[in-house]
Length: 142
Image (cartoon, rainbow, N blue to C red; front, top):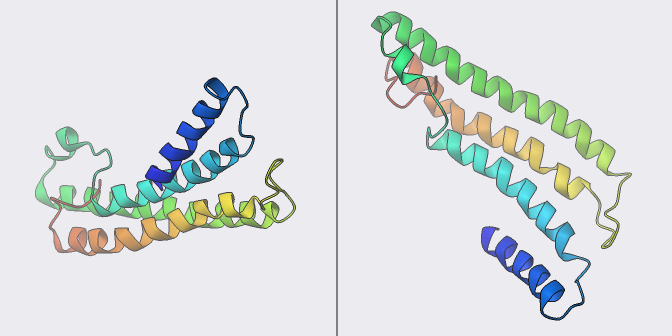
């Protein structure tokens, strides 16, 4: 997706400044791809445990408290994923009545990135959750 996004934006800039005739569709494709990249990227961040954590604070807690904080952190991430699914689905339903101005694509394609990202966030949080429950908090989100 990132390669296609880069090519799309390059074509948009090329058409505007070299050909002096802007392609009208490149912006819509860029927005669609960017939305998907954001939500899929958030899920990949969860899978890799790459999101922000407060190690400096959490590492000062006793082991039992630290484990609880890690479990709570993973549950918060999973709750956020659930929120993305619930609210994203409302957007998808709303998108059936909306079209992009140039290409006439249903905005459901853009809005579907939200619940898809939320579902993947929950899916990728499950191993972290089990690891945090067992006490292996080194890779669990907090």
